Image 1 (cartoon, helix red, strand yellow):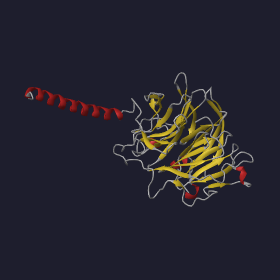
Image 2 (tube, rainbow, N blue to C red):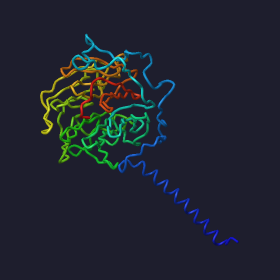
Image 3 (cartoon, rainbow, N blue to C red):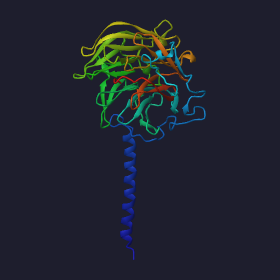
Image 4 (cartoon, rainbow, N blue to C red):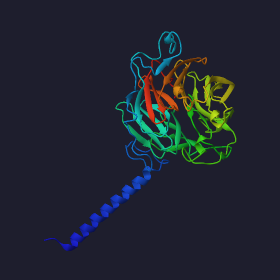
Length: 389
């Protein structure tokens, strides 16, 4: 026979257990949004209040080789005769069986790709959707790495395999530690907030160099609208030992993408000032650099972009060629450009969307990942990306 008093106690205990489980679920959900504590897991879930699950295929933008592709792919254009000039001497940058592929889609504005060789995945920002995405190279799986991401923009990797991120709404540069916690690298200069850090690169001595235009505080789409506190739009260096933030260049209109040459004797910085007015620059500048001293000199224009197009991000290969994005202007220029170390334009990769940024990845660093507006693209090359991110 059942004891009614015992049954009541069992029912109460069961109810309490359910309530505790619900409470724990709620606490876990809140903790998952606290990006200052831990990086989010790679669960493929609907981001809060945004466009929904990132898709790997749509009827409008199918995955795989781009429409009209046949070998050799017409999306890969060499501007030199003979065509072996688009690559190492006597060796073309693209072989006949290489094609541009769309590998993921479903974003509002893809930016800031970085490759993690230990996990064979690419992280990249989807700025308006306030999230960092992860594309796994081994099986093509797409997931949300972190959401919210403080409207992250540029990403890179340091010498210890940690993620370095430029955040628009955080107005800061952060480092994601190996345990998932987040460290603020820079958020102020001379006691005032940074504008909206855009892109970063890490030197071999551990110093972090980053750009600080105002794009992320111009409205509430890619950040949080605010007045700039830094009068000038600077390029900064963070000392690897002291953490001190120092201005290295202060005469840009809107400094944007940034990278080093493989030997770290040259620093390349993009100026997208053209977005602020037609008389402003749309070009890449190059400087002689002393990385350890944090000093640059002999600045000059490395390459002009065809206005109204601009370049936004860039990477360097092992032979010192510069690979940069192109977009926002003539659709025929949308894609990637490759420049020789002397500034000579060698070739183009044509993409059917405005391109913001790119990075080298893959086992041999010979796969170029390209962030093109709503999609992530990839193409194998016959060159290798420099070891520096």
